Amino acid sequence: MRAPLSKILYVDDERDVRVVAEIALTRIGGYEVRVAASGMEALDTLRDFDADLVLLDVVMPEMDGPETLQAMRMNPATARLPVAFVTARHQPRDLHRYRLLGIAGVIAKPFDPMSLPSQVLNVWDGLTRPAVS
Image (cartoon, rainbow, N blue to C red; front, side, top):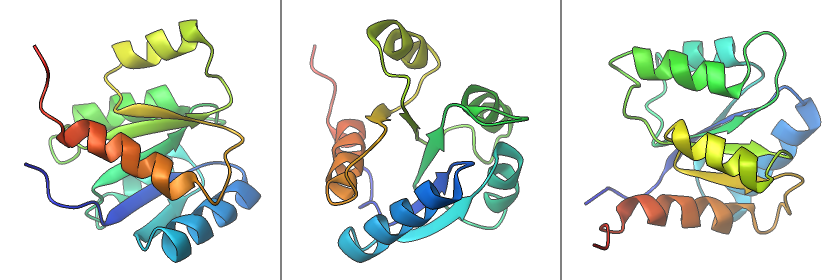
């Protein structure tokens, strides 16, 4: 059984999107949120921020979402940390590829700031439900 979701790292190279997400997740969702502008910054942030969940943009310069996820999986400290992609690329073939990478879920961009916390909670709840066989 997972503990309740309380700490989120939101990673996006677009400043305005980071600001909106941070406001929505802190004020509406009540989460403790840190933001990062790049994959490298996310990896640095995770060294001293014990996130429960990482929300990761797919398309970013230098180190994109899948590359950041791969780097996280190679580090024992972050290897099992749940990651959801936040992306405008959410066609069925994209979703299939993301699932193969082992992500927890996908949140479509552009997102509605008022519903972002509930979308994040749906991803989290999907992690805590037992698998049905």
